[in-house]
Image (cartoon, rainbow over all chains, first blue to last red; front, side, top):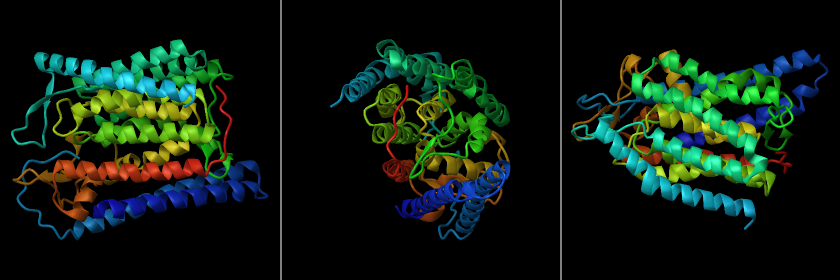
Length: 82
Length: 344
């Protein structure tokens, strides 16, 4: 269950960081002395950055893991689904 | 035990029993007789298995929803909305089961799933509340502009990510069962004794009765008619009860899988339209990750890259375990949420 520990840890970090981002936006950013529209744009941008950063990080980690697979590919049999 | 929890347990039990003993086996026999089957690709000999398991799931769920709508006046509108929403999702899935829609076409059509809820919100704003989802620590979200921007994609997203992880026997009903039970428990934690918990009873009961037929080795395959409507159901109940955050956390494995696949292939594509395969079957029928750089990156491929070739059963166990991790985080989120008052 090595994969569950690895991916589960990743999921936990994602969750924890989302909560932190949520608290920061709702308690700090939305109380900043800026026009309401700018506060909203800044908040939405931060959520987008969070999502993109995680997606890119997970893609990069995945490609690295797949590239360094210690397991032999073996003989390619029937292509399985996703 | 409170009356709503009692009604929940009773509905789940009766629904599960009828799904297991009646609806699913009857439909499976009918589908085999008319030749509506698909080969199970990961088994030796690729046996033909009855397809479109979404039909008995849908029938079972709708029957229980109708009973809840009749028995509980305070849930009537929400039950009706749920029924309309999942019908749209089910119809799209069924068309795909029968005619095979393209990836982009199917995704675009699933945006229509939100229509009944948005229409109800515009017609009866006092009875259907949207926006300001409940979040941990803070209570209610203030930055709701992002909610309205994401709304058209919300149910389409839930339906499609559940569909995209429906790749092995038993994964869809097992993971969505965990997700549904988690959100139902979260409703109790956040709202206390409230009728909204009953909204999950039809789905949980139907999935419990159906799972024995879809788990390895499957005697019934879901089809898009199953996965799209189950995903839409979870998303719709979450929306109607303001539990979007908890639902999102509990569906992280599905969302992660969907995001990885879409990002790695550069868009919405059906399996048939993708270049390269992420996994392959070894001569002893174990699954293994390919090294093809153009192949989509999926959660399954990641699991196999970390642990090496394994059987379908082993992969499914890991996917369900990941769902359990997300479910735990969702429950922790609910425990961190200040108590709310449920308004029907």
